[in-house]
Amino acid sequence: MADPAHDPALRDVDAAIGHEATPPLDDGDGLHGKVAIVTGAGAQGDGIGNGRAAAILLARSGTRVLVVDRSLDRAEVTVARIIADGGDAAAFAADVTIQADCHAMVDAALNRWGRLDVLDNNVGIGSRGSVLEEDPARWQRVMEVNVTSMMLAARAAIPAMIACGGGSIINVSSISALRPRGLTAYSTSKGAVIALTKAMAVDHGADAIRVNAVAPGPVYTPMVAGGAMSAAARRARAAASVLGVEGTGWDVGQAVRFLASDRARWITGQVLVVDGGATLRGPERDPGTDR
Image 1: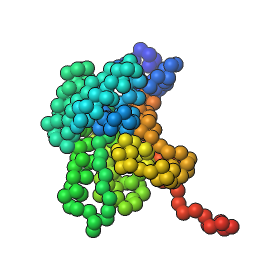
Image 2 (image 1 turned 45 degrees about the vertical axis):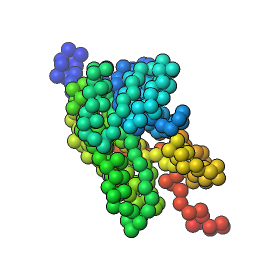
Image 3 (image 1 turned 90 degrees about the vertical axis):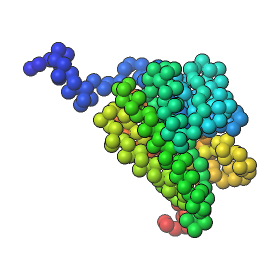
Image 4 (image 1 turned 45 degrees about the horizontal axis):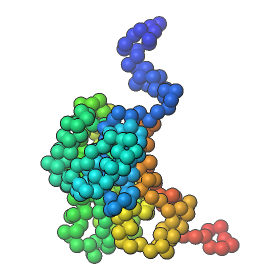
């Protein structure tokens, strides 16, 4: 019988069926030296939004990060935090609803670091109301920002990832896609993000590109804080989860880092819900009954 150690064909088979997939002794996450683009990675002031958290955490794992935001100033705040931690990052201003901007940000990453391994699609806006209440122009804008931007960013990034031997794309959805509650345009857009994620996972699995989604619950971020949410409202949001704890951008960023890493090497086309169990909540049981 041929020895796989000396037969290249058998070594290829072993790799395909997992015999060569044993994690190294240091159990690293495989992110050191890779290059990531994180869109929507700025935030108001010094706050920690989902994109800023993901960028910082990826950099802490040794990933070089292109921090993308429409506001260069906000992107530069994120970069300053990464550099202060000893990481490597650069700021880039782009509107990811514009195809040319998406190609420009990919070119910026390639020109600076020579490769692209991770794309975190983190841009999104909200809207409130039913189809009867929603303004059609606002509906169109929500779809453009929340869905089309991710398609355009992926369309620009995927060829670069293929040239590097594969990669990981993480699309930020929302539990509003799983449990709609009065945010119809937003819920619809985030549901489309999940469908897009699954479709791209099928389309590009053969290119060694994994595509997954994160569905955050009601985390507290600078965008939320900008609405002057009261302490009582924050307590109510925390109480809505099974854990009774308020989520933050760090929680979402940790999920993004995991899905980008080698620890998620066999995960694609999935939705990782990060909500403290909020989607598990139903009406409280009637006292003294089993209902």
